[in-house]
Length: 418
Image: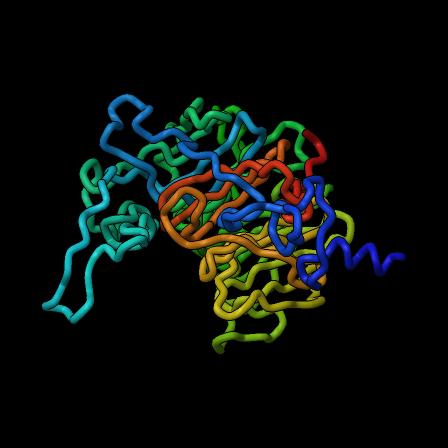
């Protein structure tokens, strides 16, 4: 009986048909569709429908008619009506240029390539302010106010995509804000921001009026109990213990107690490509914890794998995420599954806690619902999925499709105190 139930839950992986609320089209089976009996179409957005024009364009702000979102690094839904969006400044709003051939470079070459995104908001000495160096704008060759604006790094939007809060008072302390969270075990709902170029982790009051704590020394890299070197993501245990993925340069995981006191760290730099050696990393990117088993899941991004540790850094297990694969985001759902957003494949991928592949969906592109380098992912209380796209320079909201198989929806996160 237990085996049958498990097989039904993992039907997408083993080829079984799901039972769904909708009646299949006469003479057809449900197959692998996210919605049973769908006539025509494809699962371009999996079990979701994209909410178009969310958030509303940045031109909703006075004086921003010619500006748009920069590289959107992180996103967090405190509720459907309060969604934090974290980005690296603003970029000029550009119309897609006409395709132009470049025969002097080579035959059959043109830019922009038809049906592909034409601008990378994250890469380049001009397109990406804050992308090089932590000392001012060292390394960035653009001109603020012309090539980019360092404004509105952290905003809050409502369910309709309207900007309702702008935390511009903190723009000056950001250089490459990387991820944003609210601790699920904190009744006061403090807001946390990781800034990898400032080598700092910030803790704000929920209304954004006060910076109440800084971990690391802002602007100073290091590899000890007091410093980070390009940290990336956070995760918590129910007792307030916090894990910091540290990160791009230090390739370690750092454990703190509930008051921010350093406890321990683990991890070494990989010395070979596609390294499978336990406890070595090539870009510690995502981190997530199982609050019951107290296991720590860590994204070893450039080695295309997830490593599993106990709460004190003892290696337990690992599994690959595919080839090619660049696992950017790691999401632990309350129903005990792991989800990643993969840059190489532009897919949202579901695994069980043993690393067994269960389902994936997604396509690369710039049309609504496509994805290009998802760097943040969050789910609200209504089941809406939010993603932050670094390369596309946008945030997107996905609403569950009527009749969609609930097993294919990205699971709710753990929420314990709010």
